[in-house]
Length: 233
Image (cartoon, rainbow, N blue to C red; front, side, top):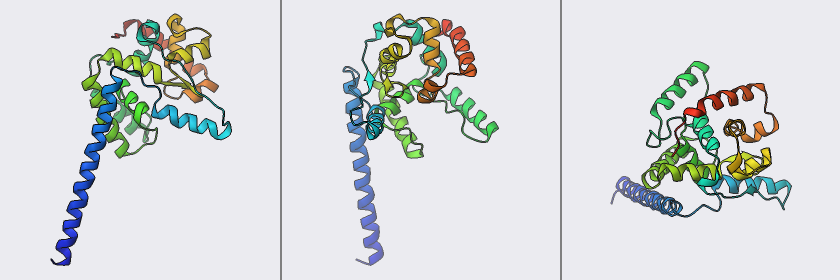
């Protein structure tokens, strides 16, 4: 066989093996997604990454995290998070195309990426399996996992898991740990103002934990006004 034909044959076999491995990995992820539709995740990719970072300076460091069921999370926090993060949560299938279009327009006006348009489902997919790094490959995998989650979970389960695994500060994960860390009370008893303050921290919790200034306080006030109309499962 001539050398060029052999090279093409090797290339075809290599691509075939890569495709099979990619499909196998997607099947592994889907299996995990289906499992978590009924059983609560003990940890997430974001949690493991953050714990490893904390233990570089303190080998004994532990995360603050306590899982609580959906009914033990304040309705005000559920509404506040939807109002702040994804106001079309109940209407979309994992991707808010109108929100993405608005984000692209804002980014074009600013000349840089200032808005992402990610839904709660997309953020959950990233938190569970991926990292905060930015690349087209990671975004593609995030989209695939988002479709798996939307196909196998209902909206109540999506919001329940998101509220229990979201990062809310330096080593603080989940609504229960956040409520106790910032307000000294369980997530079930959060009021509207407390819920709104927690919700607006989600885009950059470690930064806002150190500095919750007037602009963020004004944003929390806007979210509190909007959340009365937020629909949650």
